[in-house]
Length: 392
View 1 (cartoon, helix red, strand yellow):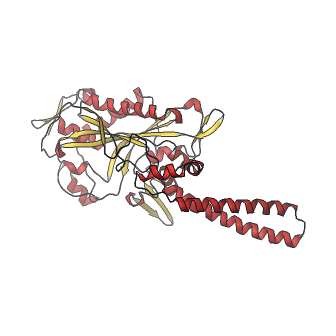
View 2 (cartoon, rainbow, N blue to C red):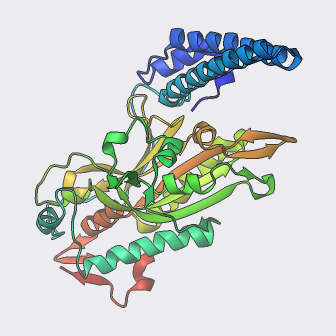
């Protein structure tokens, strides 16, 4: 959400900026609602004043009646204004261009093979539907150790605080994170009697709402939180029997990083987050590149997003494994998260990043380190194993 005072003072700049995201800011509607709100606030103010000073009972009752009617009108205006504000995406940074821009690439192993691993996608389809799979031993053991390595590195070297979070959230929580109203069709819905809940599309939703309506002490900033969960997205999945099937899943595991930072230094912390993610890929010696997402591809809630993509032999191309974004105060306005800045409260800036999507980095390792019916264990992972390779 964007601040209403900012919109009042920067209507045309906002309109031009949002146009880059192909969102057309409804200026007339916004102006109309703001003007009507002003009128009703004035009327309520004078009626309230008149009500207090008036001692004639009949007249006082009439004033109270009109006063309550105006208050109800004001509630409707505020509701319509809030609906309008919730639909407005975040503003775009000047570095975001018409096309994706590659800003860095690093090559290690860059194989081009057509090897099929058995991820039991056919059993997944039979038991759960398309977009689900079973990973069995010894590959499941490798999967687990990759996840542990990445997670422990963030805790030990990058000063993150681990939060165990719920995988189910309510409607309001998903409004706070920005998934609703824009992405409601991609969410898994759980219905129980009259209650509706949602499976989280990312633990970003849970981590954000952990701090809902909090005022963070500035001495704890930057506040760096980490969580690892399964994530659920109800997207259209094609069905086949290749490695490509686990690149895009309806259920997948992800380590999520969230930084709550002061507004002045948000871009500095974004660069730091990207370096933290990049270090993992360097340690694993997986070929990767970093791109700034274009106006077309950038998230609805993001100001600027850097994608880290890894080389995936099965598709003979790069595939996103981490998305690092500066959301500025877009989510904190929705969820009312503030911090103290120069003796006044301000909405905090939020940086987030997936670090990493476990299924995708696992697949990249199995493919890039494959050699003669064996998967060679990357050097940084060998402390978890008694062997140097896994037989397939």
